[in-house]
Each structure stands twice: as C-alpha cells, then as structure tokens.
Length: 154
Image 1 (tube, rainbow, N blue to C red):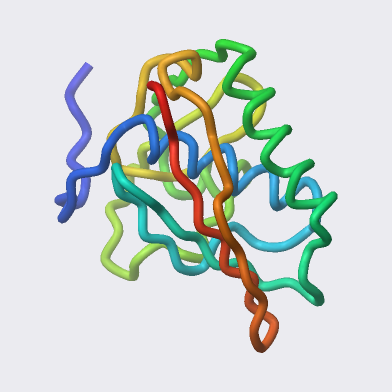
Image 2 (cartoon, helix red, strand yellow):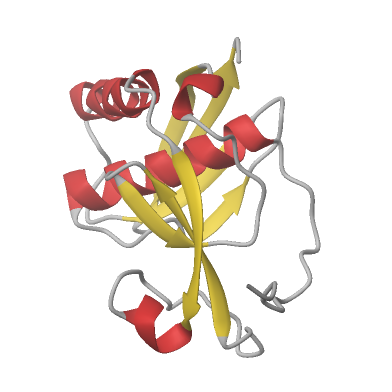
C-alpha cells in the first residue's frame, strides 16, 4: 500500500502526555457532553487544556475525571493508527478543529475502543506506557474550565 501524503506536523509531542490528552478529551466529552479541548498545551513537565463548560466541575468531579483517565491508562489499551478519507472520518470523529488545508486522507488515532481522533501527532503504542495522570490545578473563567495536569512515572 502506498503511504498517504499528510500535512506536515509542526511540533514534537512527548508521546505519553499527548496520548493522555486524547484520553482526557474523551473523558470530558463522555462526562460533560462538551467538545474536545479547544486550546491545549501539552509538554513533558506540565500540560493544560481548556474546555467549554456551563459551570466549574466540583472537586468530586475533578477527582472522577482523574480516576477515569487513570482507569483507561491502566486498561493497557492498544493505540493504533488508521488512514481514511475525510468523508469516512467525518462519520467517526469530530473534524471541527481540522485546518482548512488538511489533506484529503486523514490519520485516525484509536485508543482501544475508548477514543478515536484525527491527529498527526506522536503517541505511545499502548496506554500502559503513559504512567499516572495527575490533575494539579484548575480554574473556571467566562465559561472556560482550564485544567493543568501532568503525567508521572511513565
């Protein structure tokens, strides 16, 4: 099979944290019905994601988010890649953040049966390689919940 031509990627992610971001995004969508993060900064030392919410999650909800992300990590799910047309992907993943100049062929990253996302970034091969997900702070302003987190002991 011929290798698909994709858009160039302009950054280098730390795979454990970038994969954890996918799991966090799916967890937020599942728990709150919100879109995936609209603004994310993922690094080795610390990361942050912004979510559009009606109200600030309670401390119990924050603990539940952290617990669910760690549950998915501990499930040792495979992280796989599939290439498909933009039309086929539209029936599976949210393409609202796709850049206007995105290629016709998209790279879909799947985390077991938990998450599917169009992404050209770097990921671990299995969630067991991520380590522990820790939320260390969060705040809520003007309908945006910003969560700061990190991955430890990958």
